[in-house]
Image (cartoon, rainbow, N blue to C red; front, side, top):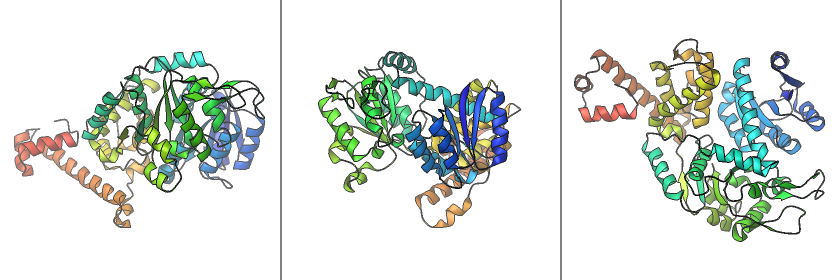
Length: 459
């Protein structure tokens, strides 16, 4: 049986989930506060940890940091309320694998747990068996690459094809959930290294005291707990690509070590006396401004220039609304496949709400919302009642907070949603005659066609 730990101060939730998961062959332990959870982690190994974001004695970020020290290989799923979604997506920087929102639906949670275990086992195998990791990564390197319709997405695609055949390092910059690892993998897939490993490292989840071992490996007996030799991620990726996600979170000490590896193309396991020659391509990602970090002395300037031979900027989903339906359809197909359902699409009202919502978690949040909606949908089309509250109740108070870019973006999205709905109503009124629709809307046909394309209206 798979060991699973629930850390939540709501005893009713713990009782319901523990009984449900036990029926699905999980060995479940329960803790009602952070300290109890940490005690369990010191005595027993877990594949998955469900941790409430708001505990009486610890925050979700504090728990993530401590969990990753005690059991670095465990997958952590954050439990959060609707009001904390934008905060919860930030926990990915600190090693969270996924998040679920209250109220919890056991069937939905079970799917999330199973998917998380599958993803986590693929990542953990990199640390235990070099040959197996190469085989798995080679198979995964032929995955599907989805291109959006927006000008920003087309530019990113052009950059991927330009840089992939080269050996240049790159930095991918973008908010949480914009698909930075997805783009890095695409660069790897189109490169000469495609048949070799692609190793992803979450620098934000690396505990300072274990980062050296995770990156460069260690020898048996080199420190307490080093019971056997272990290759690091750079060694496992030899001949392929290393993806350093959230590189800005690396400690200064590990930045120095990384710079040496890039310059000399050699690594040394902790406790070893000999260097190991490596051949890897480095792609880094960050959701912060590394130029500012360099100015503030938080990030080494020489390392920044080493990895920043080419930069790709990923725009947030709210700035490329033309892509929303493209990715929504893709996630719908994947959700139907994983949940064994046949939902055909989205109602016009749902599409309108997709355009109105701010998408704090970007593509990752869109994926989660659609997967949940598919699970809850009983008919052919996803309706509004299957969407979470944060989408149904857009927080209009954000508009009145005074001149921020976020407020302006939200206001534009609401105006765009109203315009889209007006166009749809006119088209329906004239039986989708575009000439008549343009006349009623008092715009020319070219403008109407541009609007149809902008709002992904299929007419």
